[in-house]
Image (cartoon, rainbow, N blue to C red):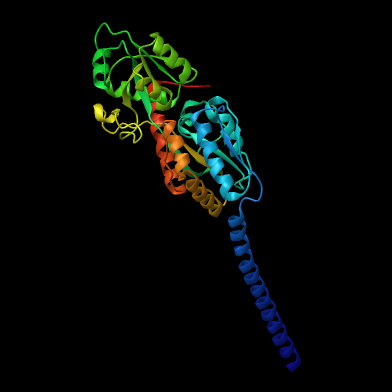
Length: 341
């Protein structure tokens, strides 16, 4: 009996020692693993990073990506490659990144369309702007400008609306395309202002501005960068901007909101996203590094010269912003009746 008790006690003590050893090893692994992960984040990246721009080269979004890529390359000591993957209003490039590995090495510079409008506009979306991405930081925001041909007897939005409400008014407006922020932004104004204005969608701002200058259309709405030079030279008139407040780099132009549409704000924007599942510490590091790149005075000057401005934010701020944008543009799509199969 004594032998039996002694054996049982010995067995229990052996088990306790074994469990204690396992606990010690587990703690050691934890202590080693955490710094290893932190060190890996601090050392990121160890190879080239790709920023996908879901539009053709040469536009405002492309410029934004290249300015940020230049700053990141200097900070990281690694190549940051801008890859243009246009198609389907930004959907092609965005879907590509949504399916990429969540390791921080493939990012997308999403925009109002790809991550705000398209989820309501397209019948068959192959990604979700919230469920399939980690928001990193907002990058830019710029106004759409409502412009008129010089022959139109209106110098501000209220004068234009009064003109459009006349029984013999037969005006039309051009936008950057069906379902774009310019199209939907004007449809929101039409709904609130209760006036009629026929819509002619174009394939981007360039052909629309050409027709506006030539008098084929009387009214247009497109990004300020595309028309600011014409307004300054007196070839077109800007009657309103779509930002919530006057734009810092173009303070002479009044907003839609201050001309009888309180609370109106429908400016295009861009921002950086990573695939869903990218570790939070890595998202925060990339966000901080991008915001640092956007703080460079030379980069800021180039954005202002292009008619836009950097608008950095934290991942949490940008996530909340995108969610609000999706809801706002869903209402605009409903009002407009726009739909793409």
